Image (tube, rainbow, N blue to C red; front, side):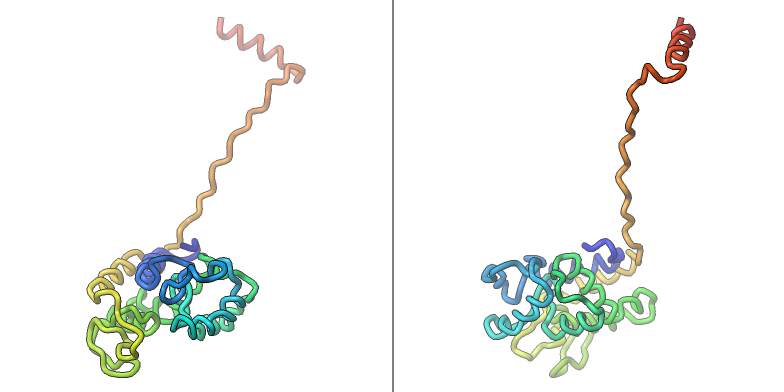
Length: 214
């Protein structure tokens, strides 16, 4: 997890990633990543964008990476965050982008107690189709009940996790808070200078030490 992501968000992103793409940061929709010429994490943003349309035609969706970024979502993030498309979509960048999506969906409001767990859960379900809504609600195309994907009925998506599991994680997320992990520098080794018998006063100090020991 990228070290700039606070504790609560890191916990939630791990849960999202393990649900959306258990095989990790190089995943593309349908776990077809082994068919690619090189891993997603070694591709630049420009390369991923260029490939996503083809992935939709070949595999059924453009969903990419641990958090399954859709083509439109990734394009919006690039513009909004003014990203260079020459940088690679590596693991740390994926974490930072997914954290930004959390903030778009109300992460900060949820952590501050300004929106309910159920509301935040609905917003997460709007972003990640494998997540269930936590209460009956109007979905993307029809009314959906607690436990269903927000996009139920589209013939493509369904919830992959139980609503009670999401609620338990969201409680842990709020309890974890927004502390950012502190990177502690490794202690530097102490380098002892070799004895210099030509240094001024060396022999006098050595003789005095012998006398004290006698």
